Image 1 (cartoon, rainbow, N blue to C red):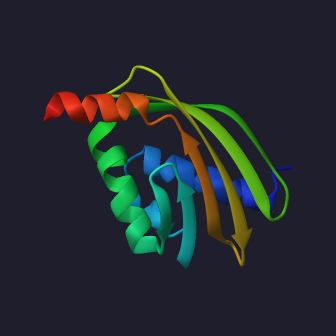
Image 2: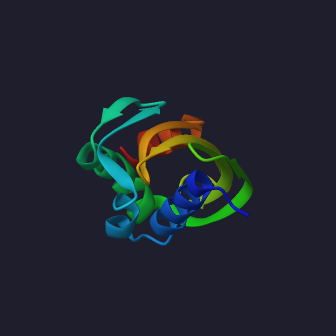
Image 3: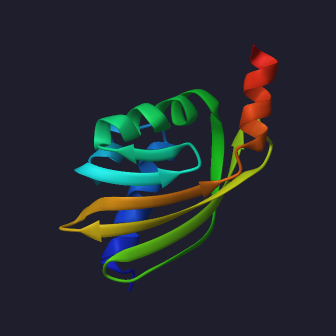
Length: 121
């Protein structure tokens, strides 16, 4: 049986990797917080602004590596193929309350994306 936090984390992941950001945002609390390499992102609208360029503009595909969770916490690790990098692994550890993601600790290597941005300039 898949835990409730893991179900929500996986549904959120499936939505944004399918480029359905409206659906993806429906799994987030309005006041959610994301700790990412770019810094602290507060609120669902700020998170959408952070995620949209990647999900809609760079992402080619995503492959789930592992996913674990309990009733309040889920950890997913996946690899993405993007315009900037053939392999860009990432992990998200999310906290769920009231059926919504309230906190996301999002870890990934920014190096290929920074290099891509420099080349684009």
